[in-house]
Length: 316
Ligand SMILES: [Ca+2]
Image (cartoon, rainbow, N blue to C red; front, top):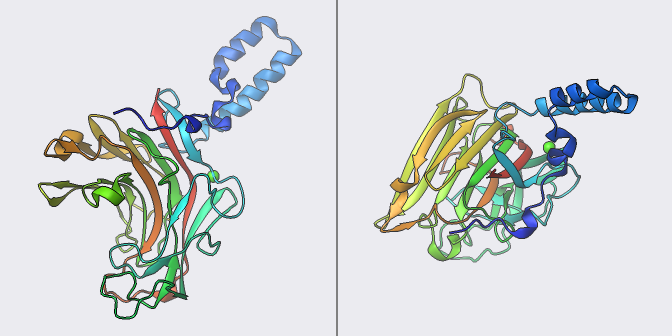
């Protein structure tokens, strides 16, 4: 199956594709020394500054020699997340979690200072689809939520089969917070879960602050399967770190700050000749609260999941 990059998604990010950056500063300097005209020397100075800017890319960011940016959001604007890139999950969505995911509400998802801030808050929020007496768990039978948050998705906007999916973010440290950067197959609605496949690129339970996890969920012979990897980190992940998945037809590799800590071969994920990971997936970026019947530590809220960027790369 071909890539589902989408023609409109192939524009390179201007700040990464600046032609000046394609000339290594050392080569440019040598060329300048042959001519030594003032404009060229100024050009060398500009190159040196831009070279520093590239050197300032965070540890673990994509190697520009190997990867070409095909989609991303640097969050260099103000207000709601870009509606051309992001849609929302709304309501009580899964796992009987206590938070209500809101749509287009600045209190829960806003862009400022170059970052996306997803905020989990303690506040009453009325369930507009409440049905007294409804029995379907988690959704219509709860009249109101005590907590709000947001879950941003690229579903129906962009999806990818293979590539490098990268996040730079600060993770919330309040007990009960459960941020994630993950994917589901675009056939999620029709095939159902876990047949659609799920890739958890960054999943973090603040209750276990020294553990970063990556998990793949799939179906085999009608049963849920999972392959789980974890990285013990010396410090909690409340500062900016880079989380990435490198995914090709052979395997998925999971990284934290450039350190590969988990690999899953795609051959392991077959379900009677079908493989949910040889199909396009969309991205989810959410801040859940880990309810599961436990009392939430409301005093620790609000909590923020702060995202510097989300980038998707194709191999060069
Ligand atoms: Ca940014």
